[in-house]
Structure formats: C-alpha cells, structure tokens
Amino acid sequence: MSAPRPPLRLAVALDAPPGSGAPVPYDARHFVALARLAERGGLDFVTLGDSFARPGLDASAVLARVAPATEHLGLVPTVTTTHTEPFHVSTAVATLDWVSRGRAGWAVAVSTTEADAALFGRRPAAPPAEVWQEAGEVADVVARLWDSWEDDAEIRDRASGRFIDRDKVHHVDFTGSSFTVRGPSIVPRPPQGRPVTLVEVPPAAGPADAPGAGDTADVSDRAVREVAAAHADVALVRADDPQTAGAALAELLARARALGRDPDLLLVLASLPVELAGPADAAGLAELLADWYAAGAADGFHLRPADPAHDLALLVDGTVPALRDRGLRRPGRPGGTLRDHLGLPRPASRYAHA
Image (cartoon, rainbow, N blue to C red):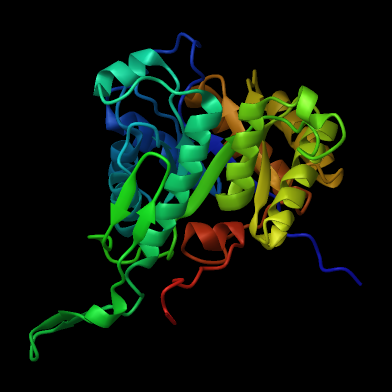
C-alpha cells in the first residue's frame, strides 16, 4: 500500500511581473500587507524578485522587514550570484533565516548583461552557461559556509569566558572557476541548517544524454537544470500544460538521482501566471491546480499574480479554501520553519563528524 501523497505546496510571488506597467512600490508596508494576507491564507512561502537592472528595493532587505511582521510564512528573495561575493550571499540569507526564525529561502539568479557588468566594473558579461556553472559553485560554497559552524558551536559561557567551541567551527577552502572562499562564516549556522534553495528552470527538453538531445537542447538551459538537480531544494518550472510540467519533474528527478541525490529531497513546483477577475476565476483556478496535481504534474504551485494587490485576496479567500475542501491543503502547518512547511528535513552539517 503506497503512502498518502502530501498536500500540495503553494507559494505566491509578491512582485508584479516585469513589464506589467504596475507602479514600483518603495514602501515596505506594501509588502508587509501582502505577506500578512498570504500568511492568513496559509500559503507556504512568498517570493520577491530582484535583479541589478530593475528599479525597486532590495528583495532580501524588504523580506527582512517583513519577517518580524509575520509568524509562519516562508520568505524567499531572489539573489543574483553573478558579480556578488558568495560570502555576502551566505551571510545575507543566513541573517534572513535568523531574523525570521527559520523561514528563509533564496532563489538563485544570474546576470548576463553588459549593463549589469558595468555597474561593478570587474569583468565583462559572460555567456549564460558560464554564469550558471558559477551559480552552481556559489550554491555549493554557500551551503558549505552555512555548515561551517556546527549547531552546538556556540558556548556563550560567561564563567569560562568561552564564546565558541573552536573545534566545531570549520574552515571552508573552496576554489571555483572565478572565485575562492577561505575560512568559516561569520554568522552561526542558520536555524534551518541550510535555508531553502530555489532554482527556476526552463521546461524540460529531454535528458541531456538522450539521443539527439545535444543537437536540440540549449546549452544554457541544461546548465540551469544541472544546478537545480545538484543544489536546489525546490525547482520552479514555468509550463503551459501539465504534460510539460510533468516531463520537467521527471527529468529533474532523474538528473538528481544520477548525481547521487535522494530525489525525494527535490520538490518541483509548476510556476503559473495568474490573473483573476473575481471569485469564479478563483474557484476555477482551484480546479485547474487540482487537475494538474492529480495528473502528477508537480509537487505544488508557485503562482505569479498579474496584480498581487488584487489577485492575492481572491487566491486567499477563493482558491485556497476550495483546495482545502478537496483535501489538497492542510488547515495548519506541521512546524515553524520553511523546511517544515515543505516537508523537507533539516540537513546535518557536513562537518559535524569530520
């Protein structure tokens, strides 16, 4: 007898799609209000996009402001790894995990434009496949930095004057294709051990080693999928139909298995645009999500509202209750961290028994 399938995971983007014409909010209260609404609806997490070129506030900083205004909601900013020091990525996401008490994630992104490169002036823009290879290295070393403090490395013993157990703080010695990292993190191990890592991948194009795949599959797309299969806890797949989403899910799990990962530790969410005119649309969306989930197309959904201020209320008050009525969403949360929400275990530090 097979185990019952867990409730579908559900997340939403707080930012309007690029090019939508929506005004760019510069008041954090806008995002706090949306996040509280998403929390009232019992969503697992929210995402907030970012890039060097877009106008607007820094996503990590905004969600650090949202953290104390919420209690349960997972908070996932986009973090660009190109031109950014991996050490700073590690500390920023770890800090968000601390201030949110274990509700942080990060969505890995890259930059390939000369305009972005000119902002830093260190090197010219690189091809997508190259920066995605670098992004995989960043994801790797960031996880190592989070692991560099064992969970019980902090002593804080006034009597002995000892703050840390130096035997439980480990040096990372990592050499990537374009950077090196030496030494431990300056932030103790985050509450989740490793905050949740997300990667958005293009739809499936078939296994990289399948006959003919090398002729048709885009090299950069394959590089993105390799990063997701190797490092992501959650992959987001934009797809127009359940067959495409299901193919992406199967491909990513096969790649993860080939890399020696437990495929059960990689969740694949279909990322869908949403524009709701009213309650009937919200109920219809619930039917669509239920049908995709029943078809095995995804482990859940990441919804991208055309107008978050309008659509999110309809999602919370129409779509989510309809999913609960179908038994596809639980009424509460199984724990306090984002990993708990998603059903992902807390990883042990790789250095704990070194």
